[in-house]
Image 1 (cartoon, rainbow, N blue to C red):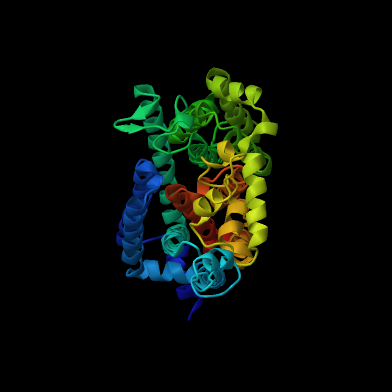
Image 2: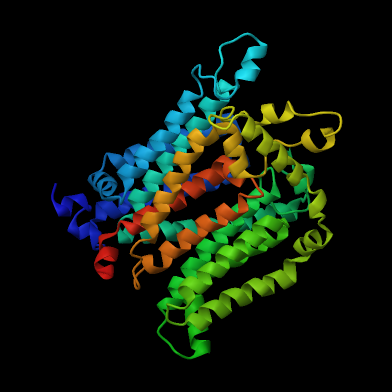
Length: 463
């Protein structure tokens, strides 16, 4: 295969795409991002029928892209995609092994009913969760194809920021209409009077708000780096005219994040946001304006809308937080079946089995560990956890290597890495990525990071 064909063609790599390619890729990106927005607003897709429906939608979009010449060339050009596919295949293999008789996880459970031992105590849950993982892989691949060419990547990120603005506005409107219900759906007690959209938890919604705000900040950083004027007032005016959607999306989602009252979500965003400002703020023109504007906007919004969050920080009794008890119990469960766990989707069942009269008030209402890493060990064990860690680690390695000093990817690749950092930090205290629509959004961002790192123009700039 020639070098030109392998990297999607010299014309496409340099950002000179045909009209049909631009139209097709824009439609594909719009369909993908619209589906994620609708899934956010459809209870986060957190129902079997909903998640399966969106899985079929994403598969159809990917199939439509792969039948096009630019889609096939984009897949071939993705940096490290073959290695990622192999590592992810090992994850699926480990999940599949939990369905066959191997006494390495659930033998104590199956022994009680006289059946052959296998790790998965809830086989249907394994199939359902594995289907969701394949859906994530589809979106990852699709986002990578869309982002591996400059013009397509910028179009996708622009649509993502527009979607962020719409989502933030929708959540604020829904909260204004009623803080206890959304149309006929009664919000769970822990989310009432906290902005959460249609998610079952304001804390998981906070992950989306944080990611949206961070991506919007990346768009603002790119806009600031392109400003021409030197006077502060002229630069601010030029920025408002150049990046109105980015500013709106940032403000709306920071507002939603603070009104969600999610302690972990706010801390995670602040860490990722701070890293991004330090990382790229020093290397772009107008760094002082970038940092001052974004940090100033965040402080202003916090001053006006941070009452709920401040109250939850001040009144929090971390020593008595139920999450501590859940973590300890999850750790004990993980150590009892360290290699294969108890099967994906089994956590609610196995966790409820540990309920006693003494811990009932703490354990009975927990549907997850509120710690993604412990729950993954409980359900998938080391056999699934190790290749999953390797998969994400390899993706980040590809994204971090050879980041150019100029161009769109000089901003977007660090922004996407920081978005991953936000998810990693928040996952220590929350189960956000287990919500289907949030997992899909995270997969899109990971795929976009691979796509940006695969652009030929970026490599030439680095060289």
